[in-house]
Length: 359
Picture 1 (cartoon, rainbow, N blue to C red):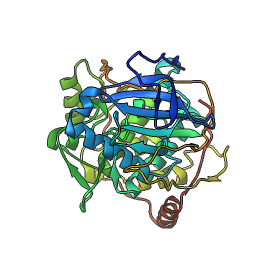
Picture 2 (cartoon, rainbow, N blue to C red; picture 1 turned 120 degrees about the vertical axis):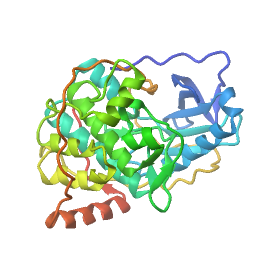
Picture 3 (spheres, rainbow, N blue to C red; picture 1 turned 180 degrees about the horizontal axis):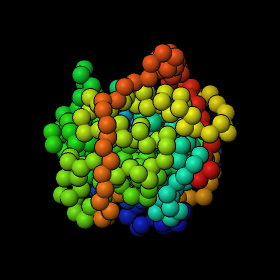
Picture 4 (tube, helix red, strand yellow; picture 1 turned 90 degrees about the vertical axis):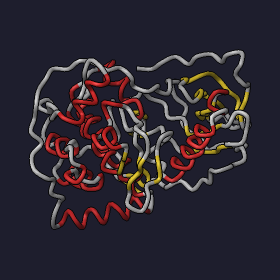
């Protein structure tokens, strides 16, 4: 499941922000992600903009937004930002290095998830979404390539197109995202809310359970058409996840549960095997807009090097099928309402139920 670290190119800097670059983890449209090492020997990931992106004011703003969004999310959910300098040449963000395959790599190399592994993934990713939404952020690009399966559990990464939601919790923008994991309203109206992220969560869990997106098709237009018009075949998604995934994939955003409702339902329905405990985790408190390079970065675990994922672009054909999604989702009642409030408090103070995956 791992990918070898690529050597540095002759055009790459030897260091950034006081961190010595060790090699390339990946490269995308914005720039390059490097594996680096600080003075203490701790390894970090550094994302640096390329020349083309630096010349684009919009791309620079997106880069600043990525750092700010990641800073606001509790560290148990993502790769924590350690330092950033958006005025440097090139601008860069230093983050915790999380060793492990992406969900996309895990499924492509090992097949669909089952049992406890699938349940823990569902809980870990929706917990991350609940924390993201609690911070007032809409991720907008949750997909298998943006989930890293590290030793401490699944982490949601890449806030490059995340947005801070307005007073109504809605982000209005041009169509942006990954087709098979975009909600219908993102495609048709160019607007995204936290409930759009919930739709992506449903598609992501279905992908993990079956090995394919529920809206796969031979072309991007076909995929977009299926997202807007077709009900997915969820027959291979096991109980008790299936009804929650179906509700999350409702075409009408108002019919979808919130990320907190999904989390409470997962815990209340016994979707997670009782083979793990809870561990307190502190929320980050690192200022980001411009942070001087850290001399002694926070220690992060050493592990086998893995490549940071590129966007999941492959569009594949799938067997046709339909599953009626049912009526409007009804949130948990009674004791579950109390549990929702308790979870909100836990997220606010930086605690969360932690599961140790066995990927």
